[in-house]
Amino acid sequence: MSSLWVERLSLTNFRNYKSGNVTAGSGPVVLLGANGSGKTNLLEAVSLLAPGQGLRRASYPDLSYHDSQAASKGVWAVSAQLHTNDTILQVGTGLQPSTSGSDRARTGRLVRIDGETQRGSGVLADLVEMMWLTPMSDGLFTGPASERRRFLDRLVLCFDASFRTRAGQYERAMRQRNRLLDQGVSSAAQFHGLETLMAEMGVAIAAARVEVVTALMCEMEIRRERDGEKAIFPWADIKLEGTLEEALVGQPAIDLEDSYLTELQRTRERDRAAGRTLIGPHRSDLVVMHGPKQMPAKFSSTGEQKALLVGMVLAHAEMSAKRRLGVPPILLLDEIAAHFDVDRRRGLFEDLVRIGGQCWMTGTDRSDFLALEDCATFIHITDGQTSTI
Ligand SMILES: Nc1ncnc2c1ncn2[C@@H]1O[C@H](COP(=O)(O)OP(=O)(O)O)[C@@H](O)[C@H]1O
Ligand SMILES: [Mg+2]
Image (cartoon, rainbow, N blue to C red; front, side):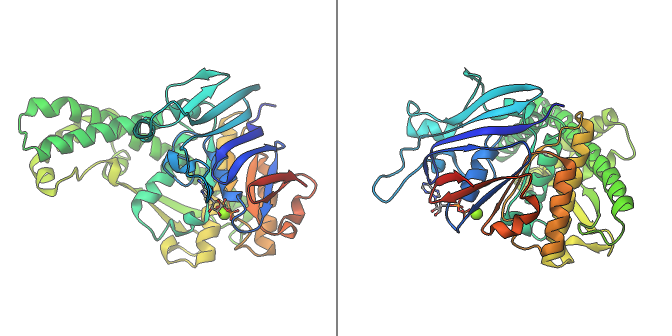
């Protein structure tokens, strides 16, 4: 059976790792260590095997090792032996010494696959599907819509490797449109190309989101039937709030492209006054309800919100696996055991084992992961030094 997992991971000058090596199995991987030992840093290194800025969204030069004696030189590397699509690839990423400081901040990180340098990290979307939850995700339902969009778009990226490119094209076109508005430009000809691109990409973004949320709701329904209303990870009622996403329910994408383009043309002066584009997928929101309680997630208790979020990620992993010949995404669950009681932990581990992919988890206490003793790789971390236990 094909699968997706990281077997060996090497870190050089990465965060608090001067150098480090980890060998993992294809199932659960548990990183244990005291606070500040480097567990989240290691997850962050794994997250850089997916496109984008990683799970902390840190700037790349910040990832470079520094200590009290030596300032960071801004150089770091993460390399991995990655099993994907029945092959084993050597994936490397990092910042090189040759890039000057100002360039490094601008140009992004270097990515090499089997020794061949790639253009940006986007190519990793074709190879690696990955989802993560960190303690920062705990505020997802109460925080700003932008965080929920980011979360949603990562779910989408696991299905549609080209999603990130389209989202990038849309963002760039929108920024240029905003700039023209700001500069007082009013010639329609100057807006036409940008708005046409925004309409095309904007509708494609909305359509991809709708597709994933629909599929996720189907998977939720399956879980609900299987686990009942008292499930440890309750089912969620998920809706997309957004002009384009909502319009797609009633009209074909091609018609919506036309009407969105017309709308962009019509609202130029209003957007100019507002100083930004007011309609588009960059304003959408993911609205989640606690299913069994029919209560908006933002009003649910902290524990309920966490359980809902985990339930969504598990459902997503399950649905991704069904779509990809049984291959689930790699999951990174930071401090996942900390807020769960024994039953929730057991439920989580059972689900993870059933879904079957590689899942990296962190914790301080090995006894929290007792149920995984037979199947997980346990790695102990002390001050940026790893050892398998
Ligand atoms: N660029 C860096 N260079 C050296 N140390 C770093 C860097 N960035 C973060 N650290 C240190 O890494 C340590 C471990 O962080 P983290 O992985 O978040 O710990 P935890 O094991 O609690 O998840 C922290 O003490 C932090 O100060
Ligand atoms: Mg941590």
